[in-house]
Length: 197
Image (cartoon, rainbow, N blue to C red; front, side, top):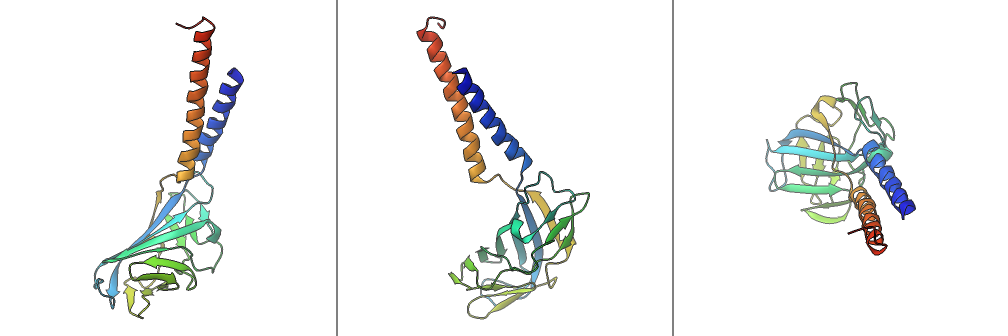
């Protein structure tokens, strides 16, 4: 039983270490709409883009996130809301770079791949909404421009630590459940052999 307890503790320790050493980050771009052609979106509406990223690091200081490190992203503007599953596949490296203070120092980002699956409140099918560096257009061809004209202005981006992924929480819970079960079995064993009360 002691071996089981030690093994479970070791597994939990490894999982905790992994959870601490690897962090998911969220890159947020905020600007305003300069030209609006889609119902529900007006000039001056706040435009917010949030992009998930994970390069396996434990800090956002002096880091580089490449295309392979970038996940899906969400967009809101006025009444428009969308989730995109695929970013534009060029360039593939150096997409987001932070400096020694953890601030974004360089950004190279061009939006979505027109062939990716985008789910939004205009509809849902492959390539229904094209999202580019300076505008996004719905499937009726109504386009909305972003005031800054693009996303490569590093000063318009912020970096924040993301919420741990569900799989990370699941692994931690399994590990702690194993520890609890091992402790319960040991206490039961002591009572049966007359050493417990």
